[in-house]
Image (cartoon, rainbow, N blue to C red):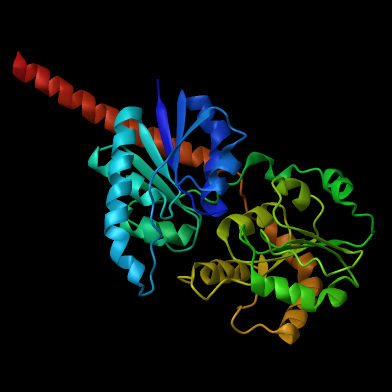
Length: 368
């Protein structure tokens, strides 16, 4: 009976890639366990997978800024590690897969103490804080970007983790559900699972200009809808689970620079304007955006510099370059990461099993 523990959470960006692995993992593991923080977003996203056992542990956010609450981090982290160790001793996993983030940190630290084989996946161009703190605990760190792997002793380039069905959406399903009847092309606006106030304001300020040529589907984040807007070509939602159906009917996109989202857009050959988050960020979205722009997969505009004039100029540039960008996106293969990750999992489990068997044989020979 083989068992795997998945961990990572706090935002959809850490959870959705783990979910993308589930169909493949189900073929190879008898037990699949998810250790998270108990957050609603984790429970909601995993609710459709009854074969996944879910456990919550105490977690603490890691803050780079000077903050009095940082004083309590070691104590809360210790609590999370203790609970994780207790769970892992009960579960007895053959391998742990971490998607990073503060939720994964105590699980990884506990797994290292128990000598469980572990690997991680880093979505962004540089390691997130949690993965950076424990990078030497992993046998392998799989990376989305090839240059990231080249800088790590244990790095292996696999590409982005993308669900098999993300390019198989049904445009009619979405259009019928939300009443998109116009013949205008569709602009999708994304601000991440939490929404982005800056992008929301840019859209609302310039909505009349945008809807001259496009229908606008705007995922604006929980509790952030603007109910004062009345425009027949504007459709706003807080969040939507079946993103593949939206992607199937989208012509252009304006988005933040989260790796999972921009690679899903890339897989669907959707030209995009990336407005990467800068404030309160380590700069990962800026690096992601620069990489995409350098490969002509996207247009990038820094959020600290953008205003309505710059935004509309960039919008017009995106429309003008859309055909060339779409052609460039077809050169990138987004289909192999899941199988590559399982190959690395299998490799480190076999190494660990062989080491254990050699140790047992040595002990038996000494006893004889």
